[in-house]
Image (cartoon, rainbow, N blue to C red):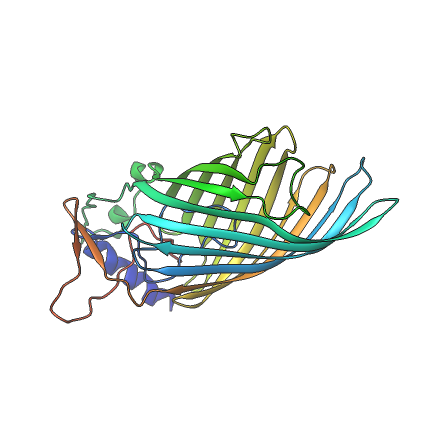
Length: 316
């Protein structure tokens, strides 16, 4: 299987000297199980659902409270209008028990609701041709400075505070969220994604933060990730570390598992979860980029083969 995959990659390198396929990949690319967004969209007309369930436990050393419970989360992604554009809806529902020395309360409700759009601003692989040396494997796999040039995307969306159970006191019902997204590919197996976020910045509860996610393709089915998230606000600040893995069931289906914890005890936080991602792409038509121009697939009635883009995570 691994030898077959390497031959497939080699064939792609030869093919990519003249043609680069834009957002779509022949295998699902999910944001799960991390919390960051990649710079690339799912592809025009593609629908993708990323769902999961999690357990959360937090305990505050000085305020004397502790809570634990379960939640569900769903992200719906849809590529529309342009190949580089994606619309995203995120919702998180949680139920838990909140305890103090004097009381115990059961809470339930929508903890987070977001609607937004993401657009790929810059793709370093577009219009770039790697000259292939058919006589030297080493020359084709030498270190390349271009890998330090990230793909860049932008996100703009809105938060909706829908539940009093998890709403910050006096938090507005609507607040904006913007994000700068970077994505680097180091060799064939490593991908580094950065999200730099300004959240609720028109309210007194404005928050600024980042997410850094490092993913490695292990083989044709498995990938693993490490992630660090930090955010700063007058209401709450924290730094969280996560790790986990994903397994490709089929080209359009993935399962995942992750665990995360923070580094302080005000509160101490532990989160673990599992998830599933699914993609519907039957309506997708391949888009080629040649000399900066987008061209739709052939109209001769033949189904055009869907190729991996050259920036996709590749296993060994």
